[in-house]
Image (cartoon, rainbow, N blue to C red):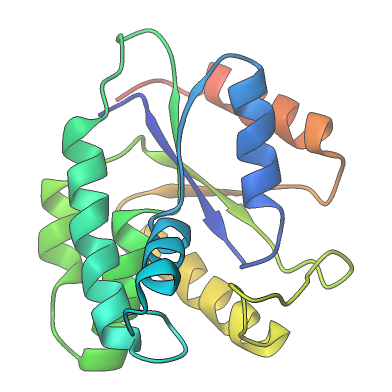
Length: 181
C-alpha cells in the first residue's frame, strides 16, 4: 500500500479540485466515500447523511473505505490518491461514539507514510446541499485529523494555499523525495 496516498484535511479546502488535477495528469484517484454516500442516500431517501444520522453515515464511510482499499490496485509504479478515506471516517466515528475503532482499522489498512492535509481556507470554503456544516466544524475536523495522523505513524505535509497546479506539483514533488517504506 506504499503507493496509496491520502489527501485529507479541512472540508471545503480544495481536495476534490486537487484530485481532479491529479487525475487529469494521469493518476488514479478514489472519490471521497462521504460524497458517494451523500449522493446515494439523497437519491434513495435514506437518512445516512451527516445532517440526519452521523453515526450511520460514518459506519457506511468506514465500510466503503475498507472496500476501496481492498479493491483499488496499483501497478506498483504509480500513485493512487484517496480523497479522505478510512482513517478520517474511523477517527470521526471514534470521536462521536467512543468506540476504539481507529487503531485497529488503521493498522490493518495502511497507506503511504506521507499524508497531505489541506488547511482551513475560508476564502474558498462554500456551504452547499452536500456540505451543510459550518466553517468552525470544518476547522475542528481539520484539527482532529492533524492530531490523529501522526499518532498512527504518518508524516503530515500541509498543502500550500496556492493554485491547483502548484498544489499538484507540491504533492508530486514531495512524494518524489519520499522514500517508499
